[in-house]
Amino acid sequence: MFEAFVHAIFWPFFLGGLVGLMSISNPLSKIPLFVSLTGEMSERERRETARKACLYGFAILTFTLFFGVFILEAFGISYGALRIAGGLTVALLGYRMLFGYGYAGLTVKGGKGNIAVFPLALPAISGPGAIAVVIGISTEIAELKTATLKAVAMGLVIHQMGGWDADKARAAFAIPPEFTPMAMIAIGYQAEPDTIDDPEVKKKELTPRARKPLAERFFEGGWGKGVTG
Image (cartoon, rainbow, N blue to C red; front, top):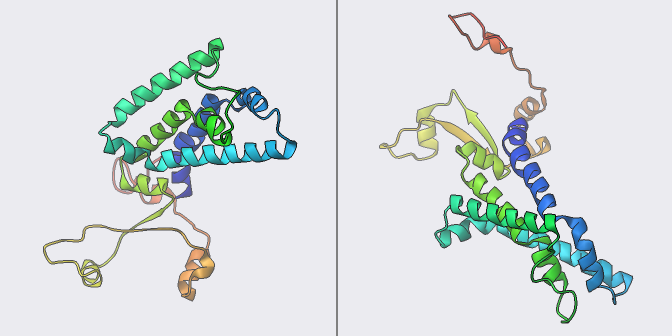
C-alpha cells in the first residue's frame, strides 16, 4: 500500500507540486520586498512578521487545495478550463520573472495594515501562480480514475478481500434482497498494532509478510508455465 501511495500520489502530486510551488513562488525573490517592508521593525518584529506571513500563506494554499474543486464546481468552471487559465497565469508570471518586471500591484511603502497578510502572504507567497498550481493538483486528484487511488490520496488504507461469504455479509450489513454483494473492500485509517485486542490477529499483523514468487501463481502460454520477468 505504501508503494502504491508513493507511485500514485507522492511523486506526481506532492513532490511535483512542491517543485512547481518553489519555482513559481521563488522564495529568494521575496527578500527585497520583505526587507523594504520591515526596515523600521525590530529583529523580533521581523521574525514574528515572517512567521505569520508563512502561516497565512500556508493556510491560503491549504484551503485552496481542499476546497478549490468545490469552488470551481460552484461557479461551473471545468477542470480543463482551469488548467488552461492556470497555465497562462504561470506562463505570464514566468515571463515577468525572466525579464525582470517585478510584482504587479505590490507596494513597499505606505499603509499600516497587517503586511503579513498583504502583500507578504497574498500575493507574494500564495499569489495567482501558486494558487493555480495548487488548484491544478486538486483537480488532478479529483479526476483519479479509481476509487482506490482517490482513497490513497486522502490518506486512507484500502484492503480488497476475497473468500468472504456473501450470505453472511448480507445478514451482517442488512443488505436488501434486491441487491447482490459482489466485492468486499475495507477502507479506513491504519491503526498501530498495539491497539489490536485479539492476540491471533495481532500476531498475524506483526508477522513479516512473505509472498510466493509470481511464477507460482500466474501462468502464461499454458497452465503451470510461470510468468517470467
